[in-house]
Image (cartoon, rainbow, N blue to C red):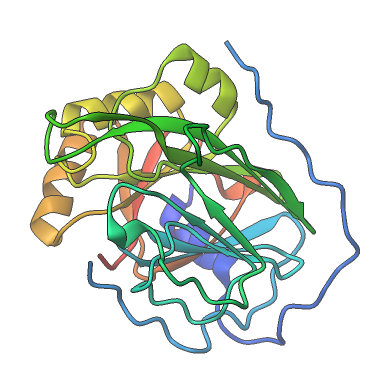
Length: 272
């Protein structure tokens, strides 16, 4: 049986072809909702291969930012900040409030939808939008000030953003500071791909993050928000006690339902 990394490389078939062409709009499948600091340059031509129906492309831009691309050419960047290296002006950006590296004070005016993970006037953020073949919603969580377990609790100041593209449900955990309650898990629903911070302190310690990943039980886990190779390696070593671990040679991967692993697997993308 081919490995996940090989399957992804074959599915990616990067980089030769025409620009993404708009296909007929398809009503997106809804994910079930009620179920019991140094970005790396990406080659300018990275996004020229057209996606097929049923595919989604993820590019790790560094820190907590990923570029998500759909078959109809919709683009979204997660935890977009003023220092995010994005090779294009995306249609959609999501942001979180814990640190300045997770939000932009002056987002590009060409961005059509700016989704902030924190609310105004004491109310939690509530997003649910459909842009062509991409459906996005959020589930709020709390944050704390400072490093580690200390700090003042700030309710609903982080959002887990869920992107549904090509029948895949992708959850970006943002700057998650606590494990999840049954209400959080019910609101998230089925998750196929989870983008998880693995710094081990600014967000969650290793044991708590492993617990969160076991709670979500997604087939594919992609680490983010790590500070150098040593931090990543420490986390991957611990994750390897619970999950399969594979490494991609490229920060750009194309995913589809048939390429999802049969058991929870960590896929490490290069960059930080």
